[in-house]
Image (cartoon, rainbow, N blue to C red):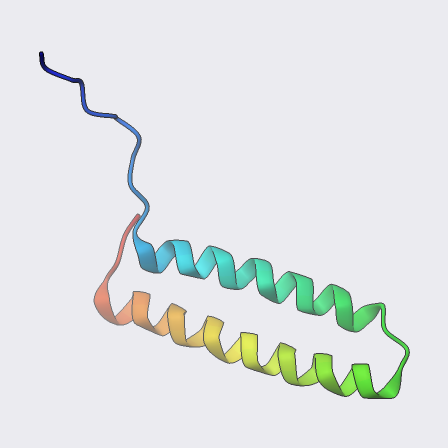
Length: 69
């Protein structure tokens, strides 16, 4: 009749987004380090800059809002 609720802790969506962005940042660094084509180098430079800006934005949001896991 009664179901037990799951005891799995919920991760704050903002923290989860930071983890995803950190993973994207690691992938972008890896891609940048392994490419030799000049056009792709430019592409990965822009991608790195974009993901870095997003990562900084999310970290600022966490600091401003005092978010915890």
